[in-house]
Image (cartoon, rainbow, N blue to C red; front, side, top):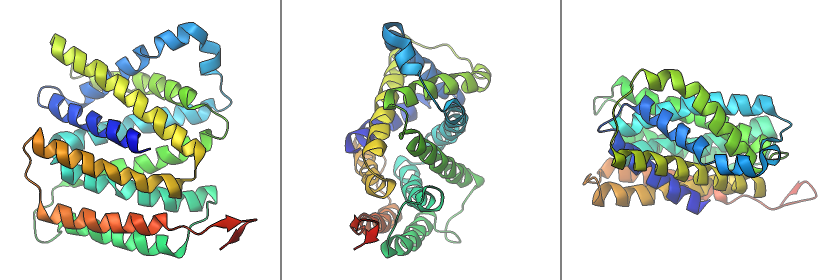
Amino acid sequence: MAFACFLASIMIAMVRFLSDKFHSSFIVLMRNLFSVIFFVPLFIQDYKKILHTKKIGHHFLRGLNGTLTMMCWFYTISVLPLQEAVSLSFLSPILTILAGQLFLQERINKYTYFACLLSFAGVLIILRPGFKNISLIYLVPLISVLLWVISNLVVKMMTKTEKPTTIVAYMSIFMLFFSIPFGLMHLQKITLLNLFLFAMLGLISNLSHMYVAKAYSLSDLATVSPIDFTRLIFISLIAYFVFHEKPDFYVFVGSGIILVAMILISKKPKIINNTVL
């Protein structure tokens, strides 16, 4: 999962770089196009094995929801400082764990409820409502977080019967289909360098999603989700050294509180014969 977070951080940096020249909807389209292209060799080798599924409806929902999530997230990356954008996205693991209990009957402990309050306080510190001007732009990352939670739940449900490769393959196909109308509205000429970056974006995204799906198949949401915080470490270094973004004190404080919340969540009790110890 930590390696998936590292790949996701690289992907975020690439999207930020490309957003200076291309609309976020076009970036989503090109990412999905190359994501499918990289699956072509696997399709040729054994498409029946990869595309064999018992949950085509889940894949359809994952693709539609994933497209909307990616469009919101890529737009967020293009308009907000990277550290701020990533910090706000950490509401996703917290809400995913709560949703896992509500919809998947996963057990959580008393620390989780307190951690949710802490994480909400962390977000308030980052946003500082009443002390800085908050535009409607901040609604976009919050919407992406909610959509992200839905995606995580759908992926978790599918890992019971679907292979990680199958999940990512169908996700790529459906997301390409759904992103075409939005991307075509912002067609632009691209250079060979940009074409290479789009290709790498598709490849890295595929690898990241595969590792996430594999992690979800091996453990429950409460164990895997806290590791997602490592993204902030990676992206903070990238933001400072690559994009020369100066660290924001309130972002550090708010994200630090969210980190404490995730540490509390990781302290889940052992369960033996359905008994919480």
